[in-house]
Image (cartoon, rainbow, N blue to C red; front, side, top):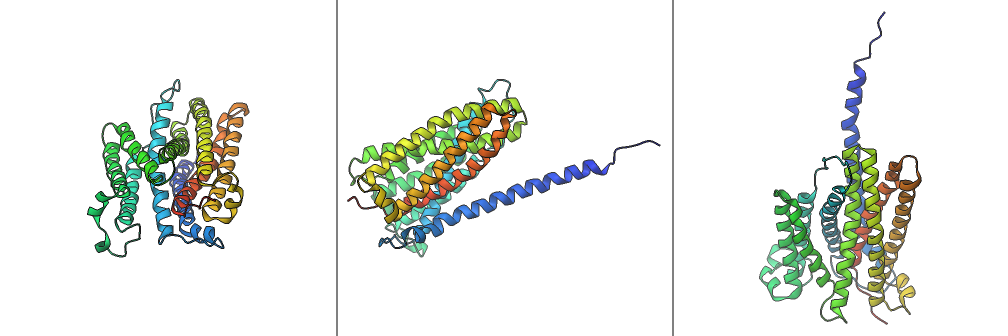
Length: 335
């Protein structure tokens, strides 16, 4: 009697692959939906019992800013990690499919929505007739909003071109526009504030988007040694990015909430509460990053560091959502 391998085994193994892919897609959609609830429902929680009043449509504006920040992080992270991957000896040539075009499309839609708000005097338009597109050219905020819309459109074209790396330039224009928008000329030292925001937003985008693309690259490669080397390169740069994000975040906080009142405002103002939530999340992410780095160095299988790294990238997505909420809440009054 001759023993043969059952033919159904291979078919069964193959049939589980689509199911696994479908499960991951569903999980991502659930996480995105939950992340969208943060800017939508967060304002009412943050503003409760503070005596502050938010602008109309603050939840929608926070959601649009969340999409805009994510649309920056994804392609910038891809470009960043792609350069790191070229430095890995013996690394496979394969790369995961870039999401730059999708991110640019989402960023264009978000920037267009934010521009429509600016065009109606920072109010949510109830009909297209209320939108004064020509008025965008008459104000500083309007011009910056138009710059972001056009920059994302150019980034989309660059992502579809033969040189997708060229999208770094329009994305850099969006970062500069966001830094200038966050600090109007009427505040004290607007250039200093814009510089801090520029560094903070750039480093945060590279950190979050870079980790996402690094994990996708590891899955695409399937080469343990090259994957561990790539994670090691990313971890060294990520440590510097975290330091820059922390330093610029602290300086920006002290500019808006003086040291003598910062502890009180962290619990009594909506902006402070959202900022406190962001600080706690970033501290948790930093702990996960440290755990992943320890595993990368000391574990028998360095790629066991992927587990805390996956949790880290999920929490970084929550941080992006909280950041979008933070930009929509009223800035606390300096005491």
